[in-house]
Structures are given as C-alpha cells and as structure tokens.
Length: 260
Image 1 (cartoon, one colour):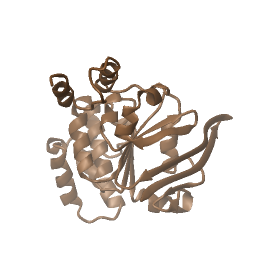
Image 2: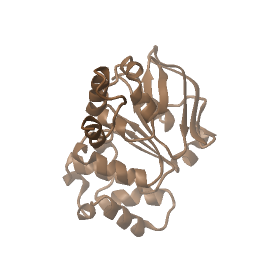
Image 3: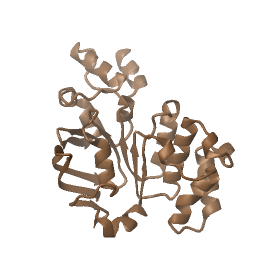
Image 4: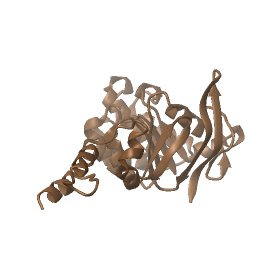
C-alpha cells in the first residue's frame, strides 16, 4: 500500500524550475533514503510533503496535501529539519516532549515521555533546560519529540548531522517503531540502512528502487554523482578485478568471501 503518492509534480521558485513531472510513491512501513546533489530540491520536496509549500496532486494517506487537510495529515506525520534550534520550542526537555503529545490529544503524557526517554537513553536530560544542551543533545531531543506521538510517517531532513557516532543505534531504534521513514541525507553510509533508495536529479525522481538493487548497479548510481559507502565502492573495485562476484554491504561478509 502506498502511503504517499506524488503525481506529476511541477514546481518553480523565482522562475527557476525545481521539479518537472516528478512522480514518487512511498510504501507504508518502509524506510526510504532520499539522496541527490546539493541544490537539487530535497528540502523543497520535504516542505511540499508536509504542506509548508502548497502545491497540488500530493497525497498522504489518501488525502491531498492542501490547506483543508493539513490538520488531519500533520496528526500522522512528523518532520525533523537539520538545525535543532528551529525544531525546539519549549524551556525544558520534558516540556518539549510533552508538547506534541498534548497537541495530538493523547492523555498518556507521562507514560510516553518515560518510555521514549528510556528507549533513547536520555533520561538524564529530562529536566534540563533546552538552551543548555549541546547541538548533539538538541538534535536527539528533536528526533525523540518527533517520534513520541508514534506517527505513521516521519521525515528527517539531514536530521542526524550531529549524531554521526550514534547513527546506527538511533536508526535501529527508529526502525523498531515500524513507521514509514523518509531520510533525506548526504551521508553515504545512510544508503546501507533502509529498504529503498530514491535519487532526486534533474527535477525528477531518477531512481526509486530497493536498496540492494540500487547499490548493485554501479553505472546507474554513479551517473547521478551519488557517493556510495566505502564498502560498496570497495566491492565495485574488487568486482572489477574478479576478486568477488557481488556487492557487499557488510564488512564481515566481504572478508569471509575474500578468505574463502
């Protein structure tokens, strides 16, 4: 089932064509990694999906993303942008986490807060002032605040910039929540985590396919200037010299193959 459907999206900004006949279907419960060169329109697409920029022919859960439907759509969608200072609005971490719960009409406020503080191992931050947090801590709190209402869809727009050393752990926790995820990123290693890779280029979705199928095809992904994870690039080189016969995404598997 497709939870997000974009049909023939055309969009210009200050007479510059950003999207031209863009189509994209997002399957419910799957993780999509959206990549593309700087300036290709990734953040603009995120703003369109959540209704900050108004267009037509964008559907979320069967509802067109237009003003009269935004309240209903935003109850089931969370968005986290890169700068954590623009995501946080309350004085303390506990108040920040309570804010989206109250806004969505849930009554299990304390239970949800305690559950997510423990899950993401930030119980020690619960009563801290948001302004006293590091950028890394702010970004993590912003991510938890987006997830705490357990939305059907969560969109991350370069939202893990300050969390490189914890990326894998956080991705695994998010994956366990079984949401539809769109991770907009420039980090090559993010391509290894998720179900689908979508490549935005020349105003269109140039690639939208299963992660393994995309990474297996060196010619296609390199033609759009997309940087791949080191292990994938290494696999391409080893395949060229006939030392292996497939692309690997796990170092242990690659080493085991080389030592056969």
